[in-house]
Length: 115
Image (cartoon, rainbow, N blue to C red; front, top):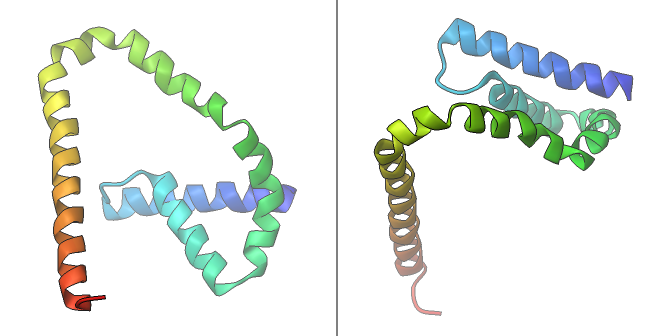
């Protein structure tokens, strides 16, 4: 379990370092997760090593939502000040994603032909 935890934290640290060095617009944890995915696809034993460390973290995943919840409550005045922009961003990204998925599905279905 310790090896898996060290591997998880090491990949997160590597991801954070890559984000800072390359000025990537994504969180370091996401880059670390992609590195874990690539390692897992290349070497099958990596997933077996990480799984014992990851299972307890997943069982208590709800605890990871407490800090963002506290941040939302403490910064509620800023969220209220920017409510229009936030609503536009969330609504616009939803509509854009929905339209993209619809257009892609229609193109794939027409390419496939009649069933």
